[in-house]
Length: 503
Image 1 (cartoon, rainbow, N blue to C red):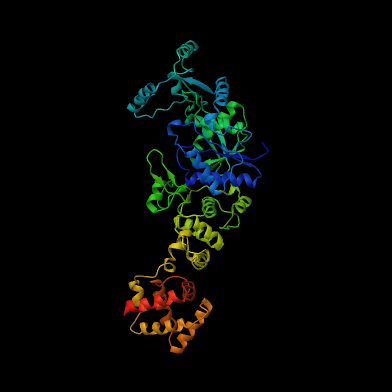
Image 2 (image 1 turned 135 degrees about the vertical axis):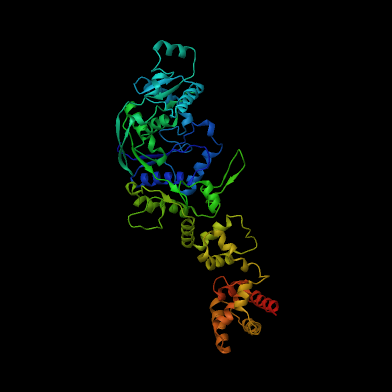
């Protein structure tokens, strides 16, 4: 296959995990880097674990991230359908084909049969595996005669199709990220390929769909690495060329060992899903990055660097820049540890890169009530406050003093900023401010400076209590900017309120 074609093939069994987003992203970046195509395929054969709304969630999440498939269930494409549940006739055809080879057989064992033999093995301190040793004594078309098999079929006895693992073969395998390694087939069991309801398992449906859809590279999580031997042999059994494989390492917990989970997010206070997800069965809500105030560009930039970094080590990258620089061979073998602080750092950087007008629109799309506040005032507040913001909501929450006069004053700040002389000094300053006609940041800065110079006072003796009067705390942007935005009347009223409070 000359053209690069990759696929992201999630199961609709719940919300899309951070690791799934990264797999989809690396698929997308690799395809775009190589001038190829990115396919979204929904692997919904596991009906027992199917969750209503999960497929729609997956598509919406990818769209929010900017990971737009070239082909998908909703978009269609030349290899449709893209839901496994709609491809039954295709699987039936290939089931017939593999049963004509020496790589598959029928197994009629009931769950009770398998439980009984499993108990036998456990009694001897052994672990049961349906493999090249045990299959010869079980209820299948290898151990039974043709007549016995036909009788079971005539009686409509339920059966599964199992893969017949070759005996004592060394498989020389290769992974783009992990290099070359070998596996002996004696360590592998005879996996079920087709369930007793006629639907294929992941292993069989997966390689059929990848072949049919002309997938050139399979990028997936390292949990599928132990299945690479089986999948390679399935391609051999069907006489098909196998795609190239790349198995991604885990995204690790912020602390300790193991894979990042929702439990970690709950413990340390961060989402592990791109969007909020409400479980239709329990009604429980799992938080998402979008609803927590992350910008999609920041989120996807953070995810991209969990296991890969460009050759120039640049950290802030647009999706287009990532695609140009992405190299699958440079993806790290070791697990990538998630950092909440780094995720917030990315969001802060992208907040700073947004124009004031863009941030205004983002704020208007939140549930914050901005009625009664002019766009002009909001834009000025954004200009003054965004430098300190990690999330868009921080701009509003950290600027409450622009909307409401303080009713209390921070105790620690008060002890630092106010003494017995302060009330008199600010009283005189209020008179000076009332005489300023052009109440702008520049003129106010000069007026306060001249006032301090005339009184022989350091700027700290004026600016700290003045800030405390206006804000209630020793925080916020430059005091002249606060004065200008509050306006003369409100500024003087707040100064007088502070004087009365401390007197």
